[in-house]
Image (cartoon, rainbow, N blue to C red):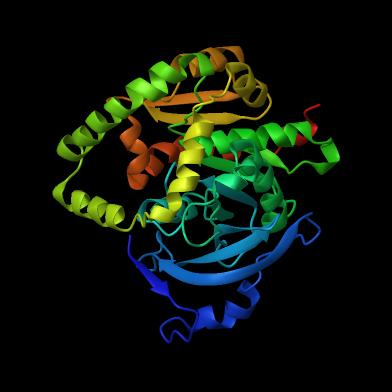
Length: 354
């Protein structure tokens, strides 16, 4: 998928961009959200445009202030229509909004769901689009805090349109916290959350944290990445992955937030908390069968207990490395995610749940 980055100046090849520029400068839909500050358009990038199957998409990067912290956000609107719904996407651990993996995931989602507004939100303190935070400010940026903030950002940026949340690895944990917080709000104050899409989720019960996350995961991830590169990646695709890795945009200033997020992940997510969400909000899970972070046994049990609400799709022979290949990951996610949207759009489960 070709990509070009467009500074916010005249771009003669695409005059329609300049015609829309003033309208795009402020992405806020609902200004009543408590703690909401200003928003700044920082960058525009383009993908597609070579075929009817891949029309030109305009991806706009912003910093959006909420609770005195600037959040990195990228937004892609539907082509020539109002959005039927919105898909919020939360990245995995260390992924920058400006990094190659996150941008490619966002772009792929815009083609899977052309009728939706796609909104990616950076993890707090990671990357240069939003603000950093240090150890002293960590209490305002834990996984629960990020979940609450993303609910407010959803209302501010998408208004009251139906909402789906896609989370990758750590992003699935943040999306779980957002869904949990939404269910705890009075019905009239909830966002219209229709479903969850988890890719390689890091929702590990505290009783299994040491074995599955602290011990098995680092070893298996190294082995899995080696296998992905050696046996499941063509030379051309390998070159593309190298470019994505080079554009990961890691910086030493990310380290305080990364260390804090590791400590948060190591607290785990109790199975009862996962059940409390997926029993009330339709959820699809896509993961490699060899991914030690994905608690397949737990999800199979929940799938049996809540038929129609939980759908687990395991990819044979793959591990957590799948989450680092956004093209392949979206190919696997597309079918189940599309079905989730088609089945849940007529009925808003999160608003009707008591």
